[in-house]
Length: 224
Image (cartoon, rainbow, N blue to C red; front, side, top):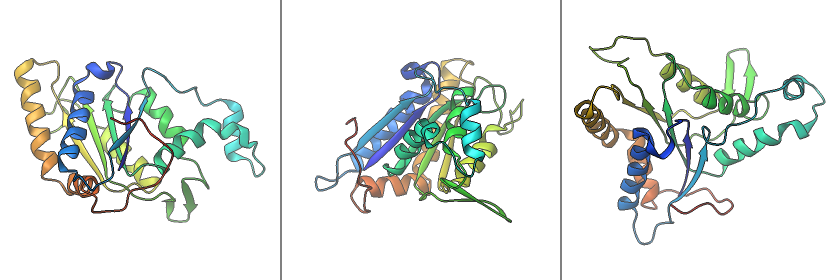
Protein backbone atom coordinates (compact mmCIF):
# COMPACT_ATOMS: atom_id res chain seq x y z
CA UNK A 1 0.00 0.00 0.00
CA UNK A 2 1.38 3.38 -1.03
CA UNK A 3 0.19 6.68 0.42
CA UNK A 4 0.87 10.14 -0.99
CA UNK A 5 1.13 12.63 1.88
CA UNK A 6 0.85 16.27 0.88
CA UNK A 7 1.72 18.89 3.48
CA UNK A 8 0.70 22.50 2.84
CA UNK A 9 1.20 23.79 6.37
CA UNK A 10 4.11 26.22 6.84
CA UNK A 11 4.53 24.70 10.32
CA UNK A 12 5.46 21.34 8.76
CA UNK A 13 5.96 18.52 11.23
CA UNK A 14 5.05 20.84 14.10
CA UNK A 15 1.51 21.36 12.82
CA UNK A 16 -1.37 19.56 14.53
CA UNK A 17 -2.58 18.36 11.13
CA UNK A 18 0.78 16.85 10.20
CA UNK A 19 1.01 14.98 13.49
CA UNK A 20 -2.57 13.77 13.00
CA UNK A 21 -1.69 12.54 9.50
CA UNK A 22 1.22 10.59 11.01
CA UNK A 23 -1.20 9.18 13.59
CA UNK A 24 -3.51 8.00 10.79
CA UNK A 25 -0.63 6.20 9.09
CA UNK A 26 0.14 4.51 12.42
CA UNK A 27 -3.49 3.42 12.74
CA UNK A 28 -3.34 1.88 9.27
CA UNK A 29 -0.18 -0.02 10.21
CA UNK A 30 -2.08 -1.58 13.08
CA UNK A 31 -4.67 -2.81 10.58
CA UNK A 32 -1.98 -4.40 8.41
CA UNK A 33 -1.55 -8.15 8.48
CA UNK A 34 1.81 -9.94 8.23
CA UNK A 35 0.87 -11.07 4.73
CA UNK A 36 -0.10 -7.56 3.58
CA UNK A 37 2.14 -5.33 1.51
CA UNK A 38 4.27 -2.87 3.49
CA UNK A 39 2.81 0.59 3.89
CA UNK A 40 4.94 3.16 2.09
CA UNK A 41 4.57 6.92 2.26
CA UNK A 42 5.59 9.34 -0.48
CA UNK A 43 5.78 12.74 1.14
CA UNK A 44 5.69 16.08 -0.66
CA UNK A 45 6.06 19.19 1.49
CA UNK A 46 4.51 21.96 -0.58
CA UNK A 47 5.40 24.59 2.03
CA UNK A 48 9.05 23.68 2.68
CA UNK A 49 9.76 23.04 -1.02
CA UNK A 50 7.29 25.29 -2.88
CA UNK A 51 6.45 24.65 -6.49
CA UNK A 52 7.45 27.20 -9.14
CA UNK A 53 4.74 29.67 -10.13
CA UNK A 54 2.74 28.86 -13.25
CA UNK A 55 4.50 30.90 -15.94
CA UNK A 56 3.63 32.02 -19.46
CA UNK A 57 5.37 29.10 -21.22
CA UNK A 58 3.40 26.54 -19.20
CA UNK A 59 0.12 28.37 -19.77
CA UNK A 60 0.85 28.50 -23.49
CA UNK A 61 1.66 24.78 -23.62
CA UNK A 62 -1.56 23.83 -21.81
CA UNK A 63 -3.68 25.63 -24.39
CA UNK A 64 -1.63 24.70 -27.48
CA UNK A 65 -2.57 22.02 -30.02
CA UNK A 66 1.16 21.28 -30.43
CA UNK A 67 2.54 21.89 -26.93
CA UNK A 68 6.16 21.97 -25.85
CA UNK A 69 6.06 18.87 -23.63
CA UNK A 70 9.14 20.02 -21.73
CA UNK A 71 6.89 22.58 -20.04
CA UNK A 72 4.98 19.72 -18.39
CA UNK A 73 7.90 18.29 -16.41
CA UNK A 74 6.67 19.56 -13.01
CA UNK A 75 3.08 18.68 -13.82
CA UNK A 76 4.02 15.14 -14.89
CA UNK A 77 6.03 14.58 -11.73
CA UNK A 78 3.11 15.59 -9.52
CA UNK A 79 0.56 13.61 -11.53
CA UNK A 80 2.88 10.58 -11.47
CA UNK A 81 2.98 10.73 -7.67
CA UNK A 82 -0.79 10.41 -7.62
CA UNK A 83 -0.86 7.65 -10.24
CA UNK A 84 1.60 5.42 -8.40
CA UNK A 85 -0.14 5.61 -5.03
CA UNK A 86 -3.25 3.97 -3.62
CA UNK A 87 -4.37 6.68 -1.20
CA UNK A 88 -3.99 10.41 -0.58
CA UNK A 89 -3.65 12.33 2.68
CA UNK A 90 -3.57 16.14 2.52
CA UNK A 91 -2.67 18.30 5.50
CA UNK A 92 -3.62 21.89 4.83
CA UNK A 93 -4.38 25.02 6.80
CA UNK A 94 -7.25 27.30 5.88
CA UNK A 95 -5.78 30.63 4.78
CA UNK A 96 -8.25 33.47 4.35
CA UNK A 97 -11.25 31.16 3.96
CA UNK A 98 -9.69 28.80 1.39
CA UNK A 99 -6.59 26.78 0.38
CA UNK A 100 -3.11 28.27 0.89
CA UNK A 101 -1.09 29.36 -2.14
CA UNK A 102 1.21 26.33 -1.88
CA UNK A 103 -1.69 23.88 -2.30
CA UNK A 104 -3.30 26.01 -5.02
CA UNK A 105 -0.14 25.65 -7.13
CA UNK A 106 -0.31 21.84 -6.73
CA UNK A 107 -3.91 21.96 -7.94
CA UNK A 108 -2.97 24.17 -10.90
CA UNK A 109 -0.31 21.67 -12.01
CA UNK A 110 -2.35 18.50 -11.47
CA UNK A 111 -5.61 19.64 -13.06
CA UNK A 112 -4.55 19.47 -16.72
CA UNK A 113 -6.85 19.14 -19.67
CA UNK A 114 -6.48 15.94 -21.75
CA UNK A 115 -4.21 14.52 -19.01
CA UNK A 116 -6.15 14.36 -15.74
CA UNK A 117 -9.54 15.56 -16.96
CA UNK A 118 -11.54 15.81 -20.16
CA UNK A 119 -13.71 18.77 -21.04
CA UNK A 120 -17.25 17.74 -22.02
CA UNK A 121 -20.53 19.60 -22.60
CA UNK A 122 -21.49 18.53 -19.07
CA UNK A 123 -18.27 19.85 -17.55
CA UNK A 124 -14.95 18.34 -16.48
CA UNK A 125 -14.72 14.53 -16.32
CA UNK A 126 -11.86 13.04 -14.32
CA UNK A 127 -9.44 10.71 -16.09
CA UNK A 128 -7.67 9.40 -12.97
CA UNK A 129 -8.60 6.40 -10.85
CA UNK A 130 -10.50 7.15 -7.67
CA UNK A 131 -8.68 6.38 -4.40
CA UNK A 132 -9.56 6.85 -0.71
CA UNK A 133 -8.41 10.33 0.31
CA UNK A 134 -8.35 12.18 3.62
CA UNK A 135 -8.04 15.96 3.88
CA UNK A 136 -7.06 17.39 7.28
CA UNK A 137 -7.99 21.07 7.52
CA UNK A 138 -6.43 23.11 10.32
CA UNK A 139 -7.82 26.53 11.25
CA UNK A 140 -7.35 28.97 14.09
CA UNK A 141 -11.00 29.99 13.94
CA UNK A 142 -14.28 28.11 13.62
CA UNK A 143 -15.98 27.80 10.23
CA UNK A 144 -18.28 24.82 10.68
CA UNK A 145 -20.99 23.97 13.18
CA UNK A 146 -22.99 26.08 15.59
CA UNK A 147 -19.99 28.22 16.62
CA UNK A 148 -18.98 29.10 13.05
CA UNK A 149 -17.89 32.72 12.67
CA UNK A 150 -16.50 32.68 9.14
CA UNK A 151 -17.29 31.02 5.79
CA UNK A 152 -15.59 27.90 4.44
CA UNK A 153 -14.70 28.06 0.75
CA UNK A 154 -11.90 25.50 1.13
CA UNK A 155 -13.95 22.33 1.57
CA UNK A 156 -16.32 22.68 -1.42
CA UNK A 157 -13.53 24.01 -3.64
CA UNK A 158 -11.05 21.24 -2.85
CA UNK A 159 -13.74 18.54 -3.09
CA UNK A 160 -14.69 19.83 -6.53
CA UNK A 161 -11.06 20.13 -7.66
CA UNK A 162 -10.20 16.57 -6.62
CA UNK A 163 -13.43 15.29 -8.15
CA UNK A 164 -12.53 16.98 -11.43
CA UNK A 165 -9.58 14.61 -11.87
CA UNK A 166 -11.52 11.55 -10.68
CA UNK A 167 -10.89 11.47 -6.93
CA UNK A 168 -14.37 11.22 -5.44
CA UNK A 169 -13.83 9.25 -2.20
CA UNK A 170 -12.77 12.15 0.01
CA UNK A 171 -13.20 12.63 3.76
CA UNK A 172 -12.60 16.05 5.34
CA UNK A 173 -11.45 16.20 8.96
CA UNK A 174 -11.73 19.69 10.44
CA UNK A 175 -9.33 20.74 13.20
CA UNK A 176 -10.90 24.03 14.26
CA UNK A 177 -10.04 26.55 16.94
CA UNK A 178 -6.36 25.66 17.04
CA UNK A 179 -5.42 29.03 18.59
CA UNK A 180 -8.01 28.75 21.36
CA UNK A 181 -5.98 26.78 23.87
CA UNK A 182 -4.94 23.21 24.56
CA UNK A 183 -8.41 22.08 25.66
CA UNK A 184 -9.94 23.19 22.36
CA UNK A 185 -7.16 21.51 20.38
CA UNK A 186 -7.67 18.24 22.29
CA UNK A 187 -11.42 18.45 21.70
CA UNK A 188 -10.89 19.01 17.96
CA UNK A 189 -8.53 16.05 17.68
CA UNK A 190 -10.88 13.74 19.58
CA UNK A 191 -13.78 14.75 17.33
CA UNK A 192 -11.66 14.15 14.21
CA UNK A 193 -10.60 10.71 15.45
CA UNK A 194 -14.22 9.72 16.05
CA UNK A 195 -15.25 10.98 12.62
CA UNK A 196 -12.30 9.25 10.95
CA UNK A 197 -12.97 5.75 12.23
CA UNK A 198 -16.69 5.95 11.52
CA UNK A 199 -16.29 6.84 7.84
CA UNK A 200 -16.27 4.61 4.76
CA UNK A 201 -13.09 6.25 3.43
CA UNK A 202 -11.04 5.10 6.43
CA UNK A 203 -12.64 1.65 6.15
CA UNK A 204 -11.35 1.48 2.56
CA UNK A 205 -7.89 2.52 3.71
CA UNK A 206 -7.91 -0.10 6.46
CA UNK A 207 -8.91 -2.75 3.93
CA UNK A 208 -5.98 -1.75 1.71
CA UNK A 209 -3.61 -1.89 4.67
CA UNK A 210 -4.86 -5.38 5.51
CA UNK A 211 -4.15 -6.55 1.98
CA UNK A 212 -7.82 -6.94 1.09
CA UNK A 213 -7.42 -4.94 -2.13
CA UNK A 214 -4.77 -4.79 -4.84
CA UNK A 215 -2.17 -2.10 -4.29
CA UNK A 216 -0.76 -0.03 -7.13
CA UNK A 217 2.67 -1.03 -8.36
CA UNK A 218 5.27 1.68 -8.83
CA UNK A 219 8.84 2.81 -8.12
CA UNK A 220 10.37 2.59 -4.68
CA UNK A 221 9.05 5.02 -2.09
CA UNK A 222 10.22 6.22 1.29
CA UNK A 223 9.21 3.72 3.95
CA UNK A 224 7.48 5.35 6.88
